[in-house]
Every structure is written in structure tokens, then in C-alpha cells.
Image 1: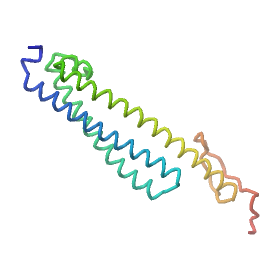
Image 2: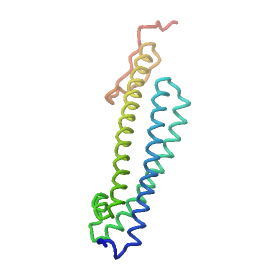
Image 3: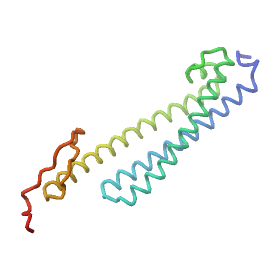
Length: 172
């Protein structure tokens, strides 16, 4: 038996729990990716009701993801101590000590999760750019028709005094 035999039951439970956590985190990331794709469509369609609904749904998912990550981290810290590793031992270090069947399976789950997180990051970058460009366009439009009278924020975060446009005569 390998070096986890002394605490076999506890360690086995850790790896089983880790599998469940990674699976659920993967499901959540996929749901966030799906929601982000819907968000892109809602941004394209300027559907504010859909954006508000999606923001609430995604907020709940992010909260659950953070909760699960906390559980995973605490569990990982406890098992690292049992293995005689540093408190901040990486998940990879713990997987190196797992039985081969579990190590291969958990590594595959981890790779899938990382790939989905990359896809989510890319989709969120698209949302960020779309939102930024939409705000730029709205600010420009409001300035041109004279609806902006106060200070405004520019695309680089600078504050500027709005200048009334001459596009529409003030007597209209």
C-alpha cells in the first residue's frame, strides 16, 4: 500500500469529496458560460430585462462556486497536513499521492475545469468589450443631442465637463 494507508479512510474520503467538488464546480462553470453566452446576446439586443435576470442568476452561481472553493481549500489544507506537506500544498502535490485510478480521473476533471474556465474568461472579455463600447456609444449619442449636462466619465476613466452639442438648437 502507498503512503496514504495510515489514514486511508480519511484520505479516500478526501479524494471522493474532491471528485464531487470538482464535478459540481465544473457544472457551475458550464452554467456560467451558458449564462455569459446569453448575456452576449442580451447585450447585442440591448435587452436590459434579460441582463438583469442573468446578473441575478450568475451572481447566485458565483456565490455557490466560491462556497465550494472554500470547502475544497479547507479540505485540501487538512489533508496536506496529514501527508506532512506544507499548509499551502498545491492540489497537484496532493494528486501525486493519490492512487493512480483516482489521480488520473481527478487530473482529467481538473483539466476540463481549467479549459471551461478559459472559455468563460474569453466570453466575459467579450461582454466587457461590448459593455464598454455600448457605454461609449451612449455617451457620445447623449452628448451629440445635448442630453448630457453634468460631468461625464470618459472611456479611460477621466472626468470631463460635458459640452452642449450644436446638433440640435436649444429652442427646439
